[in-house]
Image: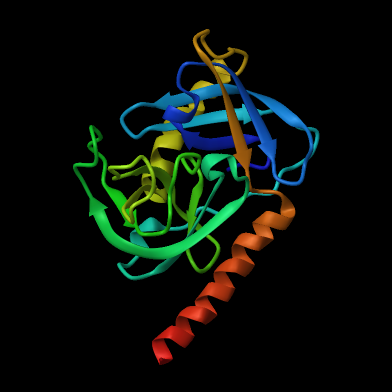
Length: 211
């Protein structure tokens, strides 16, 4: 989210964690992170790692411009399979009544499974237009119905959370039960991969339309 190490993820990924560790694709090191702020209503959290260099950043797009039928890519680490990319379309916009949340989601049929939470849903321009959050399933696996929080909502929530960073930056995560391991697919190579994968899929979509 930010060259200085601010990272956007789902709150349920880091909730009640005693320790948060971040791995960056292509980097063998693991970075300890601290919680900057969280919003339960949108299931979003901002964490931060301290690094000695500027990090590559995935660009946040305008989710209001998303149309049903647009091709999208879902990035994540489902079932621990790091840097996995799946493809699909936007199935619906402004989907509400998802679980106990009152937000409106982008619905997609791009495969989202456990381990995709907090990962980006990317459009054909390589821009993040939503944050993968939830699925409808009877088997705990993907059944073609996934939900992602629109980027514009994420931006608004993040802006509200960041001012608290000044007073909370030195705080560690409250002690509880688990370690949250977050895999970022945002090395320089993978950031370029988001854009190039989107372009390749865009060309494939044109071929499908011609057929």
